[in-house]
Picture 1: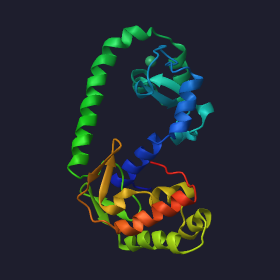
Picture 2 (picture 1 turned 120 degrees about the vertical axis):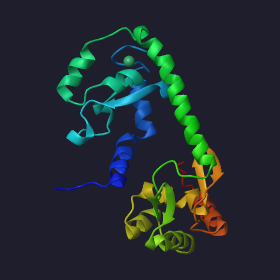
Picture 3 (picture 1 turned 135 degrees about the vertical axis):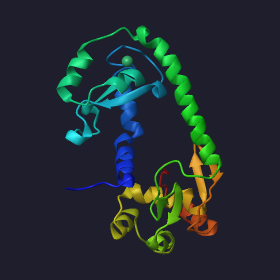
Picture 4 (picture 1 turned 180 degrees about the vertical axis):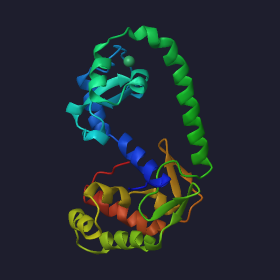
Length: 225
Ligand SMILES: [Zn+2]
């Protein structure tokens, strides 16, 4: 029997939620920003992309397996594929749910406020980036954290493509790009598009980080935020 630590479970949960923005947008557009159960039409922050077949059952994060639901219909959706089919076919009037929508909005606002506060206090809001681990909600450098600086220097000083570099260190190209542009390594925390001073130990000097940003820009490599 495999047992999972809390960190692993948390990681899995985050991973499950991480559907790329582009895919999300494509699903919303296809469904005309309408919940496919109650017909509620809303802004993207009121909507969720919902998997028809759950990931744990082998469902993919692909358009064909994803459907637009409002946050309420998403919340109550059954996990089982067959049950979900029935759930989806039982249409309800979107305006019946409007009172719930209002109270839910204030709840999510409150949650976001709490997260903002945590970021301002310099604490982590998401999972640990490469080179760190989370311990008591704090970012602690791992034993091999020196590799972060090595990767940055390797990229800066050598004629090596991102593809080669990512293979060398065992990342995907996108994963590597995220590392090379991650301001967490400067001791900072990014949340809601704002940079906050973190409480954790930086792994890089700002000089090295900035040189790498310049090189990325010169190579025309798009940043992922
Ligand atoms: Zn709905």
